Image 1: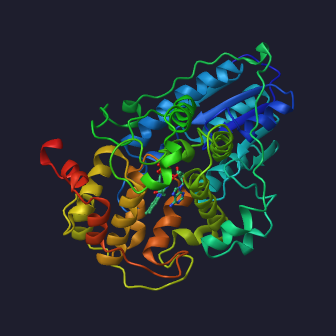
Image 2: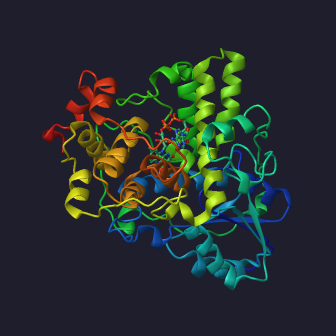
Image 3: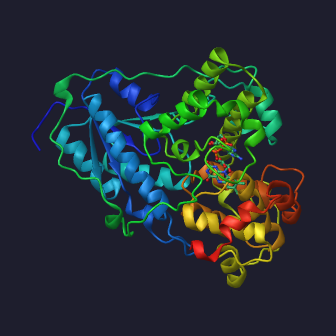
Length: 434
Ligand code: FAD
């Protein structure tokens, strides 16, 4: 590549958007030339210590779609996205040298794998200026009214400290760059086969029949909020199990950062102004606070969230019976409700929140299996895998996290309550569907 005057490199990871992206905004503000880089990191497709592929085909496809859209959105801002299927520590130092990069901008992460990967890149680019920027929270860490080390142990306390006292910052708009910012870009976005997967069709019963990418995420928001006004019924429907609209389905876009929680928040406010305000509009924000909560919990406790004893440091007798694990994964347990949910996950990469609570509780409390194995299986399969929400929720349900009550779900009663007619089970227990 020819020598240019470029200076800033934006390393995209879990912030795959142009709307309200603080990292991109800060990099653009400098007036320096900018290039974007995204790596399909081979480590994300390896087998983990429990035998699961870290990323299965559902999320892999979603990521590919997301990167196609990100490239297009950046193109419209006159910014190029270089895409590689390689290790960041191999690619980024080379790009920095070729393009005379002086500054690297990236979203601040604090979990082990993300930090380890950064360290490897840093060890080869120590002379550059690194800018780690908060870009994934609703409540900015500089605005909160407590130290992170003092993040409340109980969600209600956390919420009460924030929702009335801390303002959510405004969304950011990134201006189009001048045209000569563009570079020659011959990089190619990998296909599913390049990542080791066969092409597949979305299951006809999937509750998440959407594609990856900022454009699709924003269109879902527009549809759920403004076209259909389903937001106004969210609190009544959010425990549903079937179909597209019982909940927002924002999580896969939120997880890889193709939509920001601030964008969702400010659109709730817009909806409340233009239409109406009720318990449902409040409740969607309430759930976004749960999302922030698990992020603050992981900031506070660091790698403890991945440990068997969790942040409560509780010792239980955990089993690792492969037979029991396989039965759970394959929908062959004693509970038809658990089985239906597990089949849905295996076939679609999606499971409702109600389903997740039940199957996780069954795994940890009924089968008494090492909860980290269940969490790793979720990590592999889920379209919306998010390290903080996944490990935080799993610890919570397994009784080693933030729930002081240490509850066990009665899956039979839950099925009677949330699948009274048996319709959900009839969909996901039909052998002909698979
Ligand atoms: P909605 O009900 O429409 O809620 C809106 C948003 O609020 C969600 O998109 C999500 O960002 C947030 N939210 C809602 N509930 C929770 C919650 N309990 N914890 C944190 N954030 C929440 N969520 C993930 O995004 N990634 C995960 O890897 C993940 N793993 C989970 C594992 C277990 C065992 C359990 C019980 C829950 C897990 N969740 C996870 C939380 C929750 O189930 C999903 O966020 C939710 O089902 C996504 O659907 P939705 O976007 O339609 O949510």
